[in-house]
Length: 222
Image (cartoon, rainbow, N blue to C red):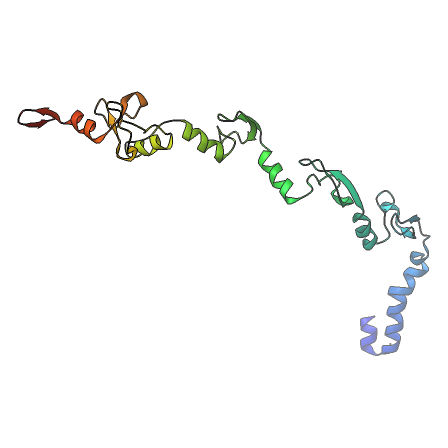
């Protein structure tokens, strides 16, 4: 054909007609455009309109358009909150996912969602936590209360700890109690690192001085 066109046997109009017949009209004559429709008409679940679908979409097609599918997904459902047990509404697409009614309940659920159950050493309350944490107390408040209850002071904090517990009221030897703020803490074994209650004694300044500086005829001696 190209040779014929080049030699002048066909004009440009004849070439266009030939191409139209070769590529468009010939397949239609063989029946490509006359095949019967094999699909079915289904009713949209949202707008109830009938629409045509192809055979391979018959088992899965439910809506006539994406807009109807989105509107159907916004249908409200009712679920009970896992934490506060209140009913709340949500869209239908979250029926298998919606568990909590609010972010507050979600955060609380995440805190309680552990694999190990612990028992608080202070209040005895059971709580859940991660196995790697090895927790002993359910809250910081219980930690502070237990630390206050357990007497484990250092040399620099022993007097402050005893004052907080009301243990410094009078001298254990002479009974001086007029000014409790001047009373001191004496270590019986002279070891400042040994802050056990049985090793501590409350003394007034005079008794404390006599204890450390034994009186002799020509002065004091430790």
